[in-house]
Image (cartoon, rainbow, N blue to C red):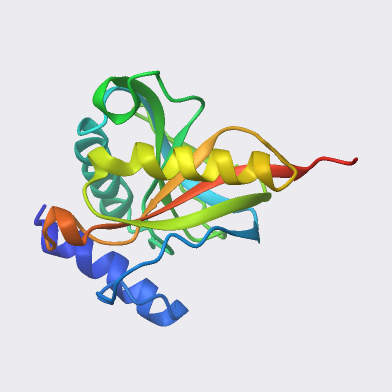
Length: 184
């Protein structure tokens, strides 16, 4: 499968939803809160280095597209917890490709079709290499504590740009951390 087909699959749906994947302005690390709705995904559990997530996502894209399913949003990875080494060490992750909510395809071959639950998240758009995303997590966690939020898991990373089409310095990843307001 050619990587440009994956880019087209993501870009087409992103364009329809108003999400500009080709926007290259300077990103400020403004942390915001939003509610994300439930999302049906094809997913695969994985463990390995942070860099291995991309190849797992490519295989998952191939699986989804070969079954004629529609990709409806950006690929993502969920993390039940990050290692102390952050992106430099091995991590457990769940690679996810959002699919049409009406999909009837069944999982198989290690792929599961499931619905991610709705969540309230603190989020920020990280711009730059994925090996620097740990600083973004640190910033969100610090901000959450300072602003009366308890953080939860799994954290999510939405890959808004295709690493095969952009230089590392121009990659944009939306980092989402589930939060709950702490009552005082």
